[in-house]
Length: 444
Image (cartoon, rainbow, N blue to C red; front, top):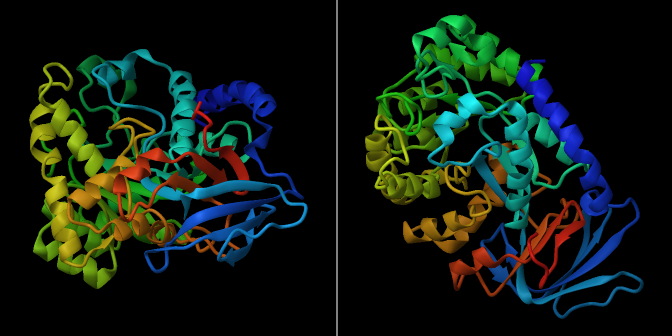
């Protein structure tokens, strides 16, 4: 285990005691049952809002769904959500729970210890859950596997996490951890290799995936092109060969992993799709050629419009980004919404992700609003964060409200198909049958 992993694990252990005492509801009791009286219900399979339903939840699963009226179930405590629309808990397929963008982000990497990031991640995870996101895919950060384990053990509160751990890059690529270091620091540390997630050959690619397995990752993330916020000039140059990406994908399959590819530039994106990645993240310069291949291969697109808007806005602020980053943020960020519009009209499969950590955690649902503004119907946007997100993850026990599925249920006043802005007003959150937030209760 790396020094970073040890420190993060130790920090979460320290955080665990108060949370386990004060928040006993983090794990559902073995024989508990709850009835949820929903005024309306979002059916993720059809994309329609249905009428009143009562959901009987027992032992972390939906046991029964009764349509029409609000059925009283003898001896079972009920939650009155008759003024609400109930929905499957949402999934954000692109977050970074260990950090959040600020003008100090670049210097903090030299000043803060891993334990500092671990402490921060606990608060960010809780904000995400309270906003209605019962599952997330954390695409890059050594804290995430340890935070995942602490949440699964009921030690801290947060969404279910699929953790990538350290992203895989090439030398000088978007996730090379030594970008921007001076000569003294670079000589002291030596060039990073597959253990640190930096590869330059097919053999390196295989080793990097196997290291992620050793580290306890759930999914693999590669940076197929340059990035907006990395301390490097290009935001879109291809950074892997097709053979390198294919080696990542093939080795990942050996361990049951799916591969997400950060990609802005057209050529790097095409190579990633050709090599068999599961999803393209951001996709800024997606061309008709790339879209055609994505449809042929069944590749998913995760737009992250929220992050694009955020960095484009902050690029206007003097001093927020380093000068090498600022022109990329201004140029690339502003294009993502346009790409999402073209991809939807072109028939590319779209799933939900925000890149939260670039923008503020807890604000994830704003992505729905931006998707609708980009011309994506509200029903399709909501499906992207429910049933479609489950497909991307390769799971079939969540993303819909149905008997036998996980009792991940959220509720908001109003009908999101009529007014998408109500997604910002989630005030009921249940994960695995445990209630974390009720109407009239503050998010804490």
